[in-house]
Amino acid sequence: MKKIDAHAHIGRYEGIFDVEIDAGEFVEDMDLHNIEKAIISSLDNEKIREAIENYPERLIGAVWVDPTEGKNSVERIFHYIENHGFKGVKLHPLLHSYVANADVVHPIIRAAGDLDVPVFIHSGHPPFSLPWSIAQLAENFPEVDIVMVHMGHGHAVYIQAAIDVAKVSPNLFLETSGMPMHTKIKEAYEEVGSDRIVFGTDVPFHHPSVEIRRAEVSGLNEEQLKDLFYRNIENLIDI
Image (tube, rainbow, N blue to C red):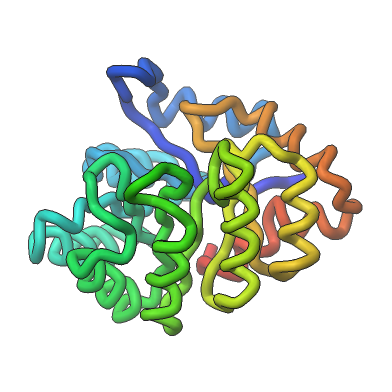
């Protein structure tokens, strides 16, 4: 079954992570795991620009910005989306120390709305990236599609919260990478909506085979797995 990876990275990530992958290595991994396309981001947006230029049929860019930089972040979004074909915005509240629904985030979401692209936002770590704050953001901007990356991540309370808040926010999508509870994938599919859960790997922080296998044993049947693995992200982004 083909797959489209809704959330991955290239580059070097030091400190506690100590992981690295370049675009060529990632595409080789994609081939091994039947991943047709991937949405990628990096703190260095120029690396993404180069990668999608080198692999235009395989890689799709999401521009990663820090909202605390003010208008520079908004300008960066317009630059990479309008001039270089990026198709999403990536936010990481934990890394840059802002609450997901802080006022500084709102211009970023408005820019995404103006450009008609989804926002991918890291979730699962207090105090900055909790599901409730991301849900508030989705409620404040109902016209913008927001993808809660990791759907609560590694904490059972946050995972359940991600499902609960997504039920009442029709513009809120859930992404599966790094979320350890395989049964919650099926629960999200059935309770949030068959069209609002997408598959991701979070490479290089997680291995594709682990993320794929978790989805395969989630309890979804073959047609439902097609929604998860590629149909839903194809509908969310013009791929």
